[in-house]
Length: 141
Image 1 (cartoon, rainbow, N blue to C red):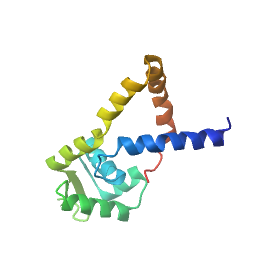
Image 2 (cartoon, rainbow, N blue to C red; image 1 turned 45 degrees about the horizontal axis):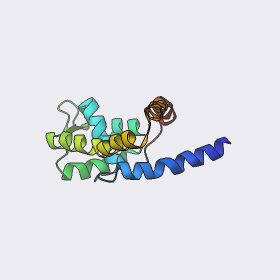
Image 3 (spheres, rainbow, N blue to C red; image 1 turned 45 degrees about the vertical axis):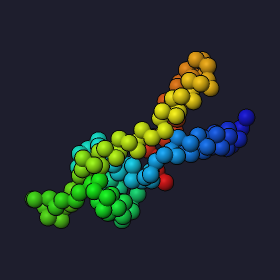
Image 4 (cartoon, helix red, strand yellow; image 1 turned 90 degrees about the horizontal axis):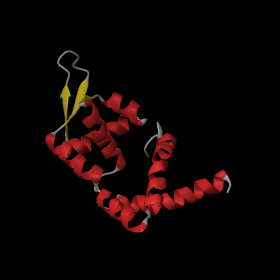
């Protein structure tokens, strides 16, 4: 199988799996990425988010405004440098991220146990580092 054919087949295989896995999510990947970064780093600036997610600061601010309107993040001016604005996760944002980020995991666990043999599950699990290697440092669309 050529690399082009393999890439197409992998893409076509992952698409319905991703749709099913994320069917219960109510947030975009961009919003989840911002919340994830805040879970990891506590507080960040828009430029820090833009750099980490490889998107423009303007796009980050659109996402941050929406998250702020829903009470999931707050923006606060830095006391020492009034030009700097820190973005911080609220308790509601932390809870929402926990719900959204685990959405679909129960379904996937059941599907793996019901439809795959032990050997097939082990093979699938062994592919995870390879998939991570492909996606490392790739921008989220």
